[in-house]
Image (cartoon, rainbow, N blue to C red; front, top):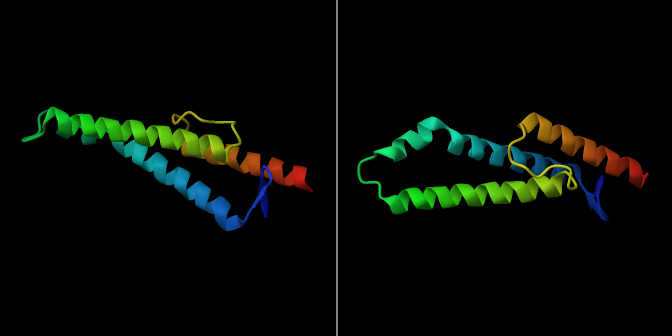
Length: 103
């Protein structure tokens, strides 16, 4: 069991947090991709509202990702610009510290 604050996390819950961080990072990378956005510059039938909706979705995903990252790292990280490896490393470190403190 890993301790998060006063809450005990099972290995499954911990893995689910890591998996969610990785899924959000993949979505962020997809939305940052030039290939994704180039189709929005002059696509047939795209309206400014379509583009606005996509950008609003991107902003929402970034906000949610920041909150999950902040939670999973115990406040040590919250910016969505870190690499997945750096995020996982800090999450592992945070949970190792929390586990050590609970012993």
